[in-house]
Length: 315
Length: 302
Image (cartoon, rainbow over all chains, first blue to last red; front, side, top):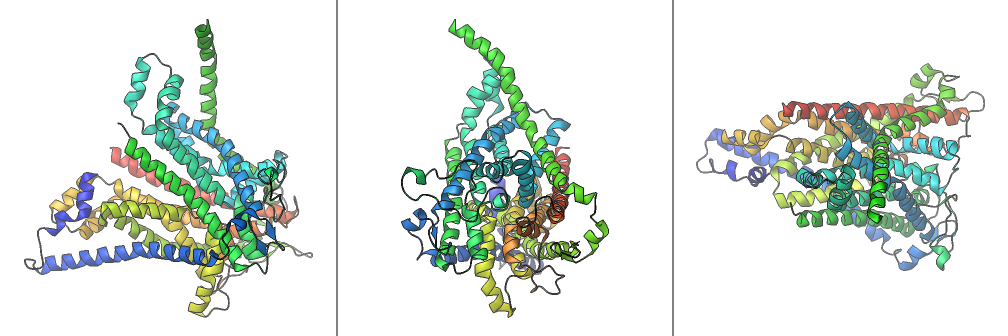
């Protein structure tokens, strides 16, 4: 690591030949070097600049519409104006229920892969399955949700079916980061605990999990960000075009039952930008900005966790 | 007394919790098979029944709603997926790998950490937002720049998909470059190589397989992407003749039509057959990329 950073600082390669001492070959070498670094640098910034530009355009166009009322009102006039309360609550529903399903399974699966699984072909198959689960296209997850939860399990199109589909889709995120967090706990911690006569599970419960908890939380947070943004898996499993929910009082926070269909922010953005005509531009951009803001702030939280974790590391 | 009770509970409880953990670990395998099974099951009656496979793969006529004779030819959809994916790959593979090389070898450490965070956030933007950007922001830009009558077409979709798959290409590619031992770098620098010569002559050949896997995973993501292409590539089932023609992809077709198809009907089932096709394609891409990556790791351990 340290030698790599010395390399990237360029201290080594710059010493032997300067502009004044260099011969023809070395001059050419320096020129090629400079051109290559320039081209690569421009390529990289060409990826960052449009991102910043696009985000600026979105925020500028959304600015007039963004307000507290935008967040707390239902869509009005056939969804052409008003706010985003119903889809916002729906997204929270989907995220929390899918989290409740995915987090226990994902964390325990991560524990299995890091603590129990030996180095054999069975483990390799589990690994392969996790990689493939992460790579299945989202629309195929949607078809699976329709086949398994909506029809086979008899949930119908509901919050529950959509959340289960999302849970399975986001499972690999939790499994992978749990596993990484656990493997960062030194082997000597476990050995010390075993020497005290603790069983495997006691070691995991009292030593391994407490030391890995921040890393696991990072993965759980990333799952939230992923589940909040996905659209395709909920299209046919539980998202609804429009439903009015209470805007006032305690009922406004718990408007959907598990068997109801709900609105969701991501699907709402899709419908108001492609399906409904005459929607105010501010409402469209405002919805997009709220969705991006939600996802990015969740990610920033996760990055913050990681930085804190690295600073606090005691081994 | 209390202690003995808890010990007994521990003796009973521990195998229970260990088996729960094992089951959860194996559940990933179960879910992959379940996905395949349920998607395949819904499409199977048509697949083994009246579906003409020759027509399915070679006809460009996608007329699922026709009263007289519905036709299910997905060739135009496959070409649509391929054209958008190809454009995205042409744009994103060089850019993503170039950025990976820059981040891993050329830029100072502090800039590197910052760039990695930006790339991570870029990867976090939901696909429906990318679709929205294509539909609302890029659309007028494409019309202005090319004079095309509509701005949602292959060009638009390809650019959006390229932006979406760059982060994954870049992060996997950077991992591959990091996996090259530092002794290689030191040896090359000791021989008087410049950083570019180091990259070109030493690192790229050494990390070849990992970089290939990065490109494959990026392309795999483009093939499976749904919402962005649904919104940004237009909705014409046709063989494109130029970059400015709108197309329809396999994924977008499922997303657009499943809601209207009658449950259990031929149209409904053919969409699940397309889903099975997509699932098989993604399995092939992922297993290949995984084997390539495992291949390098195995070699390095020796």
